Length: 86
Image 1 (cartoon, rainbow, N blue to C red):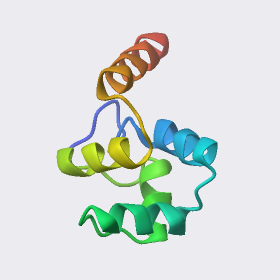
Image 2: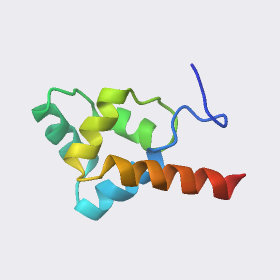
Image 3: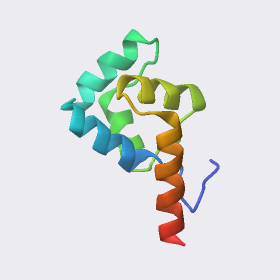
């Protein structure tokens, strides 16, 4: 599996925070993603949020859509987080 800074994804914590701010359980998030044709179970959400599973581009777009995350804002958050780690 390809990794960035030894992690399979850089968005897990951001998704967890956005999910909690929306008041969605992992199961509720799965149901909303399913309406967009993206199949996840709550264990996969857990693995993504804890940087144990990679996220495909179309999955990221679905997460952003369901959680009302602007992709440009997401890019800025990720870049800011990465610059603080360096």
